Image 1 (cartoon, rainbow, N blue to C red):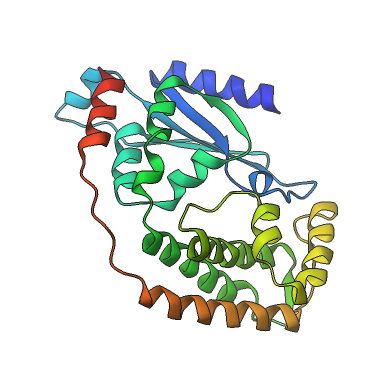
Image 2: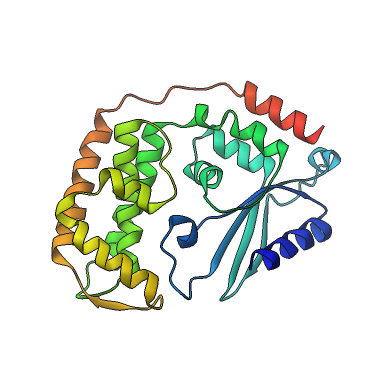
Length: 250
């Protein structure tokens, strides 16, 4: 699959006339609990030629290349990525820390050298808390639930606990989050779910786990209260990102 993904990246560069700066796995495979039939969530940041950024008719700032049962491939233009980084968009921090890297470059290393300077605790917390809330409401309130959906709530909850404790972007690997911040009272239930998730098809489902639901609801409520106590974000200047952008396209 890695060879197929690299071939796909080469095809994108050739047909779109771009250079891919960084490409990673961003889904359950990067989180460390892929099912046997999990697809590959391939995400990348690319740059166009300098003159493309000077056109009056601007190019699209995303490339949506492939979506099927095996591959989900899309990417962001460098300019879009840096603008979102300035706003402390959590996606960029996740792509930067993915344990599965298909391709990277010296240009991306320049971005990586300043990326954590733009991390804002409050922004990250609101993102992960919102994700946990919406996934809980959508997937975990019925009598029967898909087991994998628990991790769509567990991971963002643990990511919030990481940010509150350490003030840094949370790691992608679920195991790293769980090792430090998963309460021992629910660890047996989570370990069972992990075993099922990694050995059963994506559609595996069963009865709602009340103990785990209670833990998640309590955690979501407690995180919401702590966010309100945090100070507003510290504004960064555009200087570093502007210099990096000009350097890369120049």
